[in-house]
Image (cartoon, rainbow, N blue to C red; front, top):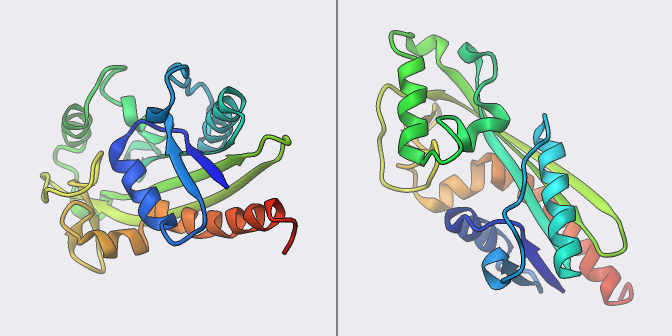
Length: 203
């Protein structure tokens, strides 16, 4: 089975490939295709965005496509940045700019009010028109300054209380076992296994 990850984000692609590495699936990404435009994220929920991206890539490639929409929800900010996590500081913002804006908005806010969670919704769109979903969440706290060199996005600010470290400090194997994306991918693995079985004729 061939599966296209609907992303050009190399950090995200690495994480997904690692989680699916033992499955009989050839994993591609948008970097393997020349004709796919930037994917719009116009939905108001993670599920809407994931579904939109998965369908678009499935239609463009004719292959089963996996898309995720994930982001950070900070309770003190009413759930922001939410679906706008990747462009929190503007359409062309990078990770550093997004992190800076988040810290700025939380200036003076004590630790107990900096609770947050990462949310990931995965959509898998198949050429026969089926659409499947999985979801994962990871609870944490926003730190007062970036820490760690690993990961991407808001990882340097997101502290996992039971480890006392940020996602960017945790070893990849630990992060990949507890993260929102890991949880969603664990459920997605079951969906993919079923699709592989179907493709093989149920054998």
